Length: 383
Ligand SMILES: Cc1cc2nc3c(=O)[nH]c(=O)nc-3n(C[C@H](O)[C@H](O)[C@H](O)COP(=O)(O)OP(=O)(O)OC[C@H]3O[C@@H](n4cnc5c(N)ncnc54)[C@H](O)[C@@H]3O)c2cc1C
Image (tube, rainbow, N blue to C red; front, top):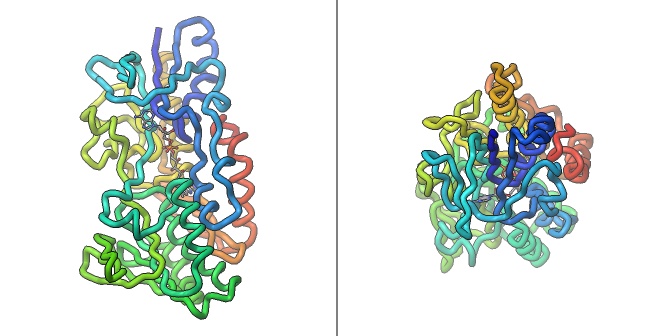
């Protein structure tokens, strides 16, 4: 009997488990394979919706569904927090004392947003990396009556790299609609020497920022907040005063992979670029935000990685070499909002940088439709 465990029931883990359940249908039916997914909350969360809570028009209750309702019946679901992965003994220890053995493990434990790592973040700054935080940002925007808005990044890497720029563009549009733009300044702080990590995306976004009068501050890595003077300070020594402060919190990988000695203190699992195996282990794969791959931490990354790990496991169980589907090319695809009902599309891989099309209504509508059809497509592997 081959035991496969998928750890994490987010985008990557749910898709990987469903694909395995379909491709190993016969072996599971014959009792030759057992497939288990472990998830701490038992609820699947659609995180891109958080941004739309902050921007108005989305409700938290529409962004989660029971994990069981998204899983193939052949998958056993264990709802518990994994405390430790004992790779020598090939078992996952979960809270409550149970240990779940594996022959194959896919780690899809995502990334954590940790605002508390920056003193005064919670009292002074807003963010949209959780439903409650996004609702508080919405309330702050509703109460905003003009002033200085500063949007910055308090640590790299973070989930959905375009999100802070998208939020900047969407807030700018909103302020114009509310006739508050003349009374407001918008400052966007980028940790590197341009507006966005990928050069072609920066080239697309920078003229839009200039046209909209958004001030760009480069090499501004948020280090500290001074609540008395209401200024945010950068590692590079710059200070910016704010009336409304919006920061991407620092992110780390899951505690369980750090505690298990599989990842360094950052929590990002050392992952092979193409096979997605966790380096230094055997039969252990990492997908989604949990990896240290030089790519966007995005649902679409997890979506394109899951079939790679699945193909490699299925091939091994079937006793054949993996097909080309078992090698990840670095494919990522994300919609990117630029405000005023327009968007663009970022599509790239390890060898081909994105060439974003001219922003238009179609790409904004693409994102709106995708947000609705997500539940019936991505987790089940229907796109
Ligand atoms: C505001 C915002 C906007 C975004 N917009 C986009 C977008 O437009 N496009 C896009 O592609 N992506 C977007 N993303 C990113 C996307 O949501 C993530 O990249 C994606 O969810 C990653 O999938 P994952 O499977 O790696 O992790 P997740 O979906 O985060 O799932 C991780 C799972 O692991 C479980 N888990 C963690 N630790 C344990 C443990 N110890 N024991 C048991 N279970 C555990 C968690 O409960 C969770 O269910 C956005 C994210 C945010 C926050």
